[in-house]
Amino acid sequence: RNDLLRRTENTARKDVVVAYGGLMPVPLTFCTGSELDDQFNIALFDWDRKTRGGWRRLNDADDGERFVVSGLVGELTPEVVLSIAVSYPILDENIRNSFPGLPVIEMRLPKLSSDNHWSEEKLGHWSMQLLDTAKALEERGAKEFHLVMAAPNSVVFEFGRRYDTRLLPPVTVYQFERNQCPVYPWGVRLSVPGISPATIVLNK
Image (cartoon, rainbow, N blue to C red; front, top):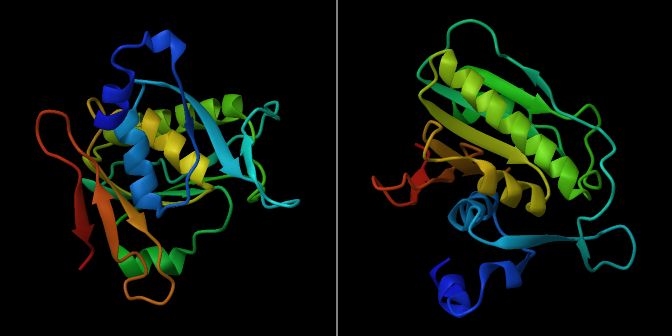
């Protein structure tokens, strides 16, 4: 973020477009989105696996697909797991393996796919669903989120940009490692403005 600010400090912000595309672990991608926030006009790219491969803009039309949210019932414990499935299923046993005893709230698309995210407008609606779910969880007593995601890189990045760390509860985003125990062995706790920087957390 600081390097981008330095490189663009003598240029009007309206004249700058930052192209983003990446291949990183989920926690670092989410954290990168959070660090950039809304400070730049960002053009999203992702890797298209369908044909010969290559970076592609997310400029398709919104097909109206939205998350189905489950688990938003009753009072919650101070810590909850928020599970977001876009491209692959997130198994209940894997969550229990890493976060025993915590309630799980699930955001899941009706049809999971690695090729359903090519619309920035659609990602905007998905992001609003994430924010609405986070606010609803806070209203029911949740004070800290453990976030697990199965989603393309651009989706994770955009969700990081839209998660408001100033107004929403603290969140730690975890990495999935199938052959480790727990299967979500580490994560990144997002920075809280004016309070703490982003930190790597080991799940013990």
